[in-house]
Length: 333
Image (cartoon, rainbow, N blue to C red; front, side, top):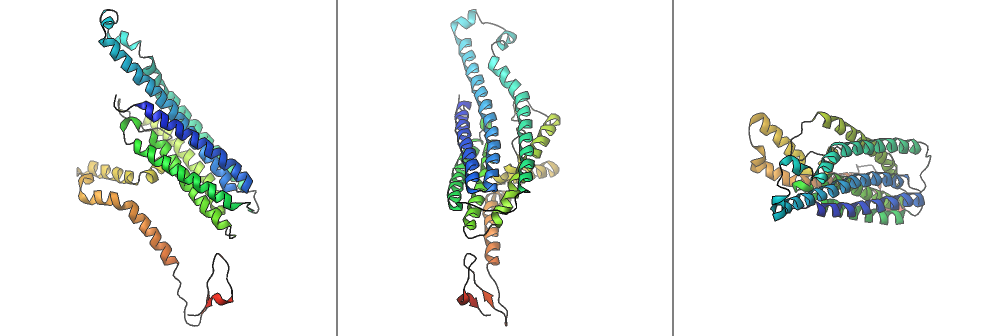
């Protein structure tokens, strides 16, 4: 059968289990380390788990429909099919139970679940912001342990995200891109948390403060985007047999998950407006491959420039190491 939905279902189940485990670990880790940012990450991971749950149900129903289609094809070729089931297309459709369930699921269940995910994200984002506003001072406990666990979660989430995103290049596995995008965002947030927890060892709390606000805001933004996608999908034209992007498949996270996607969209717009195949030119292909290295190079360059300080004549400077200094660290022009 070539590309089977059963394989995608198994990968979605594995990703769901890992995401739920990560959510539970960060929930208790946030409570143990007294880190509101780590505690907030658990709710983002739980929302990611809801996305994977929908994908598991979707691919399970697709695999049942594929199996049903294969059984009907074998039945039609058998000798008994020629005598008993030599029916019209109306009679054959009576046996397509799994296919009908799949159509109902993709038409009603997926949009309804997308609305529930959006409500969850917006509601808990607002609740977390409300709790954060009542926190007076951040006092962390065992930040080194938190850094080790969050960087492990970031690494595993990144691996799973890259794997399922690679699978989503196949047309039948395209919905996996939604889960891959959410897991990649969780990996990035986990890595930033690990760095911030490491800095907290030296009493540098700015990272924890920023992430404490950023994670609830991210939840609210993703929830609003999902809700808008549900509304837009009502008016968006559908082509039978062509993949329709799920409402919870975030376009914002897709820009990070697939950096070349925004260039494909731009090229398609230019192709449509001017009738010129931009995506086939050598310059576009070079730019698409080099965009991520260029962005990373720009970030490293800007950071390196910020590390250079010019001490003017008549001035003195203090060289700090992890926020500490002594008299010997005072230098002249």
